Image (cartoon, rainbow, N blue to C red):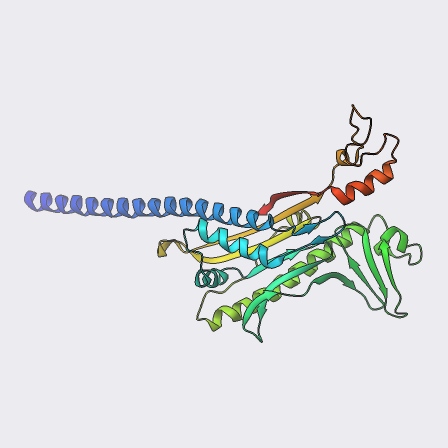
Length: 317
């Protein structure tokens, strides 16, 4: 009986050791995968951040102080070029075509509308849409908003169109939308609504685009807090949704990222000051005497001063 008891005890000990070793191996394997995922996520985050920031550097093709001209294709080219390099991929048409699968949404939000990079189902390829205005449409009127107080108001009954600051237009059309307490909130909500509806359409078309190419991954709209949205409706912004990109190890799943990068183009108060050369007593830019008017100086700065372009990430998820 004693021998049998001893044999059973040793059997239990062996089973315990086997279970312990199995758990240890599983735990070690999970820790390795978590560590690898974290390392790759940081690497991919940096790759995306650099690519989007570099793309935004291309946003001002011509800025003469009066007109801002956007080269949308150059923005895309820079985005895919830098992303390819940062991911360790070659820069080629085939690599770009492959990376396009993982961008269900690329949108360029301008002062008065949004350009949507989406599938042209007739040509079966992606390209930028015509500018989609930030429009609030009611039964009898339309309001086209911008990132500031400038609007276009259309009276659908009379066909009359008014352009200008909302404070001026409300003198003729006293409406709740033009009250100081409501204007900014309604403007922001309208812009965000247009952007999100555009994203939904992009997602639908992209899923069809991917399905035709045998990709089973289902692309879906990301969740972005309203507070974060509010921070994007004041500046030219590039919105990129990157989804379904495979990690280097199949067990790790896929990498997803949402990034909105804003290019703030503005002048500071310092830029408007008359710069007087102490030796000559003249304005250093125009060469005029010190009594040169501020209004005239502002006009000269408009001609000669190129707005400063600042690129920063506004929100990442």
